[in-house]
Length: 186
Ligand SMILES: [Ca+2]
Image (tube, rainbow, N blue to C red):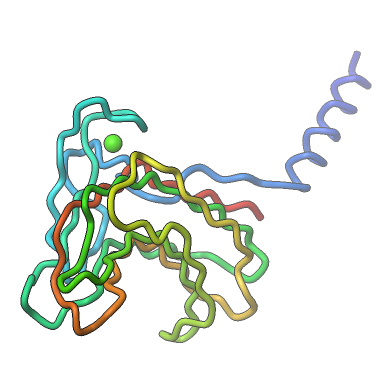
């Protein structure tokens, strides 16, 4: 019996040493705090919305809008810094996005994007995007799977609003983000 315990213990240690899959690295990724606590924002209002028939689940989602319809801001978003990410870490990021008549002025698009950035010494060294939704879309889950590059000292999880044309400033319509998740496997 003792031998069996030892064998199962050794097997458990081996399995743990092969892959360690973490929990969601994001705080308030489902926005069920009824606010955007845990997220930093730039160039957007940070309102949250209560939604009926909410496909991903829960009551609240983030509903940012570019915060100056006539001003110079053509990008904005919500972000979280993820410390402790090192080269070779496997990052799996996802978020649900819904858009309603999301558009820019003068017919240009405003796009809702999931973006993962890797930083070294205060500069972006690698980034990947998914989504790029504009117009009207029902809830859609977008995902990014990516490996942290050499030199990474910080990762950022970004929910981005991006206007395709600087001349078409401002935006109309709505975008909703919900159930943001970042899992790190190392
Ligand atoms: Ca939610």
